[in-house]
Image: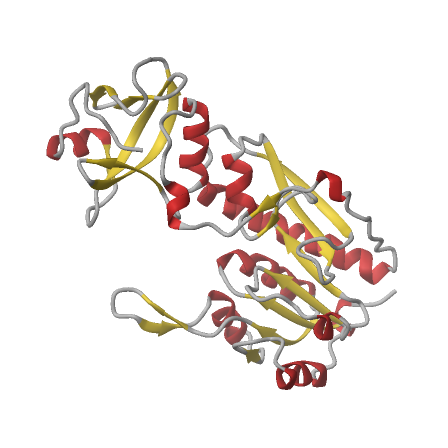
Length: 314
């Protein structure tokens, strides 16, 4: 039986989502010999360089931090090889691991992926699961190979998706689930009983990186489909429509009764703005104009009335 402290481990991750798993590895007592994360990036209105969340946590614990522009750079690969890791754990790192890196650790490179593989391989699995109207999702730990999220699966943890749950809310629950799955994976690895299961490629689906234009609402879709899009893109990039040539962001929605030309306001009051869809209507409870705060319907309508018959642009 191996002990966690005997496993020289390198962690690779960048955003908030990766923090829970890194905290779990620290709590488990693995020998963290290095943390790899993306370079500092300009942030906020002042565009000051800001460190990634993973860097800040690693520095709090006195762990060496590496921030290469390109992991596949031969000099970077040699620097990593010199750390002699037994295991590399990857969570939302933001760079593809080349074969030269995958071959370094004797226990392999293990990724925490935010879906129930082989569903939703790719960069935005949390968002895509909601947009597609899934009732359940989860996390999968997997051995990494040269494909995109195609390696053998190790441990899965599932969780229901609430009918009004947003990507931001689900993100935080999935991050905690990722920590649990990685802790179980580590326990099995230490016991010598960790076994991989091949993915069925025929069952695979893809969740590409999101772009701002993915948020454009097509009102000819059903109210349920638009509702799923809105919550799947909250908080980023946000779902939007057009109002007299301006971008109008919408949030906190519910499918509702009603019919009319898609994109037409049916009614507007303190409880929300009811907009006709291709099938049914959508009740929008929060709205936002460019440069303004997101407001509840009552506050928004005081400054920007939306009388019945107003047409919103797809």
